[in-house]
Length: 358
Image (spheres, rainbow, N blue to C red):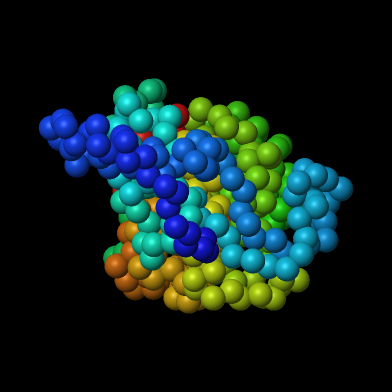
């Protein structure tokens, strides 16, 4: 986290002039902000674009794809991530080119001004057809009256492990949307991502990309790697940050809750600025219990819950997607596939897509 520093000298001439006019408090505040920040010479855009100060050892590359030079060269002892800070109140239009002081201590909660306003309800384009789910399950669960099958819009998530996918056939079985693995860490690109990304769109699915977070790598580098490999396309679903404890990973770190939330915030902020969409957080019960209860109230969640309804596993947490099976079976895919459902009706789905995509 950032260290606290003193404010630069205030331009008291500006203060004396402003005292002669009405509405002094608001104008005085603006003047003080300008005086304080001008000495640093940073614009708001420059401040938000600054990389994290954290450095960690790079993981061994798992593919032949070379990361950018600035990513590949980041090695050393780990230090805290720097959160992208917003001003404590919205900046008036006349002061959009002003700069802000960056030496202020990081608050325990995100500033209210940083929270994006609710999305304006956008005019919907032609509706995509909703296919009724016909999936089977190798390990079916009886969810009772809270069954995911009572919801209308089902989908899948895939990675290289699903191999070659017949996307047209998969859609006809009830895959109305797909989340496709793009990246993990700071140097791995799923070898099937580009093909799946293109083919899913051609088959008429709504699709988005997800990143698997690696706890031994700098968050800002991981965001850069995702942005480098996932195109910014109209109609794409919001990007997803997949945060879990992975016992099979060669990274055995389990950072503190404070560090976890800092890293996530850095990654989420950077993707939101680039794509113009608030990312979705995917997680599993054990990781949620350790880190995410009460956190990120303004982010949409995608929850894994394969034995009970999410309301029982994640009490009080609102969600957009529910991953209800990791053992799904479908025409168009060899082997098992993850099954998911959208939280709402067909009408809710069409409106959510209109609001969430651009």
